[in-house]
Length: 196
Image (tube, rainbow, N blue to C red; front, top):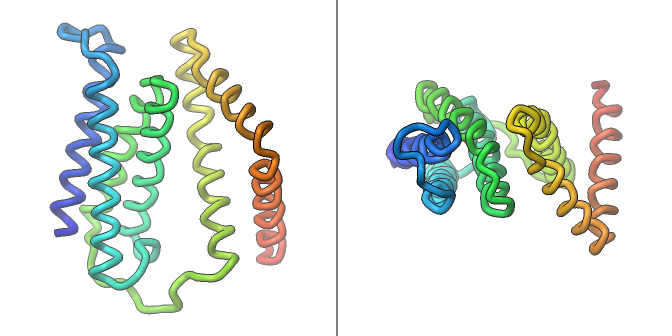
């Protein structure tokens, strides 16, 4: 069941990449607009989420320990971020980068295998929550330069518009900005304590 769901998610991610690439590359038949790509991206993220839930239910642990589950979870986060950007801004360039990246991550996870992992202390507690939040922030910082480079090449301003929309959200809801700053400070503190 895990492998089949991951293969289905892989197929939907590849379809998303193809649907995004055809209009951008001006290939024959490239009149398809964003809705099919958005639907394919939603299906990919939904099936991938179902695969991670199936893993959690089967193994009795979050899909964070072990190579294959961790790589699959990273792929899910990249795919989810790309879907949200595609949905909110209708900008397809980020999906053009994210879809092949997620396909590579899923192929790596599937080739490694989803066998049982070493039993150890399951991750939990406030530091784990802070670690996951900081990881999501780090993921955004990894994707941002690629997005900016694509905007520069294509002479677009989609990242600037996304930044403006994000700034308006943080300006309207000051507690989100305070929580984000506290998350970054806690992550720095944690890294200093660990000697990183």
